[in-house]
Image 1 (cartoon, rainbow, N blue to C red):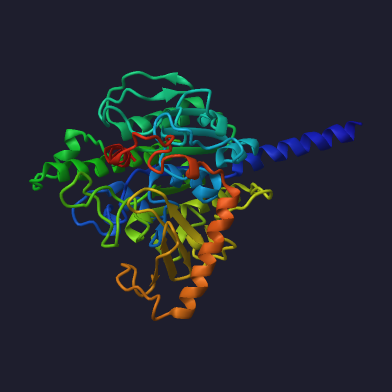
Image 2 (image 1 turned 135 degrees about the vertical axis):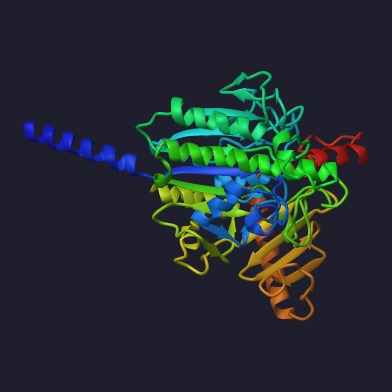
Length: 468
């Protein structure tokens, strides 16, 4: 009996350091940040010193994709590994809408929590219409031990927001600017609130640079030569987000956590507006399209990963990676198995991040679908080939992204055999996804998830689209 007790005690002693040795995980998500909005992605004006330094410490992805061209769907894919129409969050979610991330979906924080991780979400949520209301699941119902969030945008703007809730309780008016406030909450949790005996998963989702924006004057002062006040506000807003990211990285350093933490930075979709006159002066990096468009500028986004000792510093990757890959990648890093009872669209992309693979084997192709008018489209990418279709699947485009990343030349006539093959596969894949996901997209407004009604006119649709 004594030998059995000794053996069990030894096993427990061994298990504790093994658990503590598992990597910590951080997912930092910007909002409406375009592919060309960072200095390390070629922007000639916007100052992003913290992310530029971060890129030199890890790998910068040249073909990183959001899972949608609008926010709520892309966020749902990050947490589930499933393309949005499969997991149900098919569109951006208006306040009060029926659409939400269902508890039937298995989320990244819930699996990590079951495996012994402590978990925190700080920032924008936008995965339900009834925020902080028991009628729909809240962040805590999806595996977060600690959370501070908003339903959608910081209100009234990024300055002194008053619409956050923390662990189910309204926070009330806050003093400061959104991204630094969100990171301050995350840092407080890291230093004071988490169970330090456990590895952690931390999601930090800023509102910046989503409109309506407001930037700290100290960041606007960095752009004295800009005469366009809208442009100055936007560029300063990106710098504000970068500053907040730097706050978090410094906190990891101060807590001696950087060496044991995998950090992934990305954006939920491409830049807002036309980039010239309308609000939204972000850059697509010269790619065709912007937010709400399934051409590259609407879905190709910055992606940077750091994991000291595993990901080589100062590297780049040409391998296509999508938001739904975050789920299996972080689970793989944590040593947690992915669910076997459902279709996953993402794959473990670590081999693309650490340079050990030049391509990823994908049982499911890269796939996007957007219901929002007037850009309702479906797209699929297989290797370097991308096919797009209108919502009715009656009009198609075909591009070779290796030769033509700006999608200037439709090749469906020149590449007839390949076009017909990919067209058939797109139609078949779309039908399978429809059969699996809820039918909200059939019953609800495409622009926000509210029930359709006779008063749903053009002005209402435009307002919904502006808030997305």
